[in-house]
Length: 502
Image (cartoon, rainbow, N blue to C red; front, side):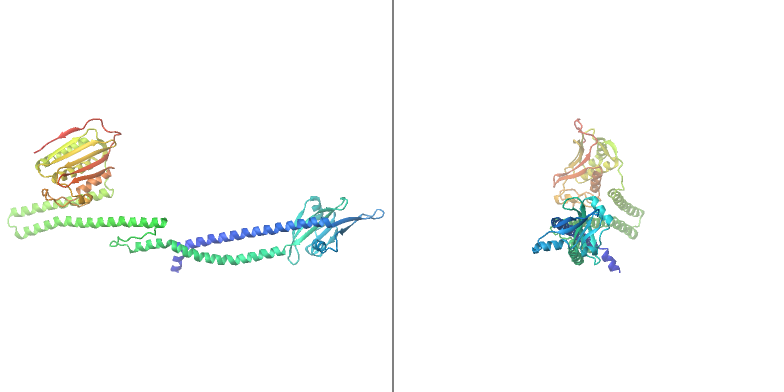
């Protein structure tokens, strides 16, 4: 029962049923139209023949007045004038008189054929009414045996055109009815057979048409987290099914990329969390088994607190980044002059730059107005400056530039550090991704690998973008472009704010 229900609810069954219904309606419509056309043709042919026979009848029939004596009513006598020795004329007259009725103006029968008597003689009132109309009258009558007859009735006059007479001639329509019945029964037998063939053909064609869809469904069933490399080959037909296959393959590519990011994220998080936890455990075990004085216990606790702080930083950064990427972290945008914001952050990093020691300078254009979240912009610039100072050798330079473009604001942080190898540039904005330390660089304290992820998200959240230019051994330049709140650039020349520390 379930199998039957599943079959009837399937798309293939519904397509076949729709095709069969449309095919059946089309065949019935064509059959009905052709039958109506056939009936019209037979009727037109019968009318034309009766019109010809009516004209021939008027040429052969003569109605003469019989002389009477005294005041007796006049009487009339119909005669047929033709050459009885001519077989053609004799046959034509006999055919005319086969279904034939002649009456006077009052409906009194003067001549009638046997067949006409069988189909019934019209009442006098009907005949008088037809005479008053003065136009040909067409009637369809049937004999007691069910044979249909088409009758053509009208008015004729005597030779002197004084008295009207009513004449009706007819012809049987049984042959036409037989042809129509044979046609109807033949088509009634052909339609079911054709419909059956159409259903089988529709079932086959719909199965062929739905095969790519079935392949997509089967491929979707085979896909799992460990088998996301599966792709469905297209048929190179360029139709809707190929579009469906391409869309499905692109979806699988996005899923595969997402799964890889999740796996990498899980691996990185496990590694980042395991390192401080392992360090805390090791230090506590060492203190537990080896420490004998209060200072030794104090040193162990301080080291553990440092690792706990690092662990807390990782958790806070992950939570904040997760909220940002999921849309839970809403920006609090206000209209700000970025030159003041950037100036404050640069001033805050002068002390770390002096300790490096690295020269930190800035060229800031005034009136760089933008709708931004101050906290997030400060976090973005702080991450960029922190990385620049960290990876710039002693005696190097870090330069910050803020300028107004026609429809945007450009913030750039450039350093003279060791640079980033070209193969690592596409990955530096990924979470926990850290470029291996170069021999030309100092050995800075390793970070969390989340700073540039924040930079990319903050720029994107503000409707901007970030790009990287780096050359190994010569330095790196990060350029952030943000939408401006002004219609055009400021005409004021950039003001240099440079602080050199040695």
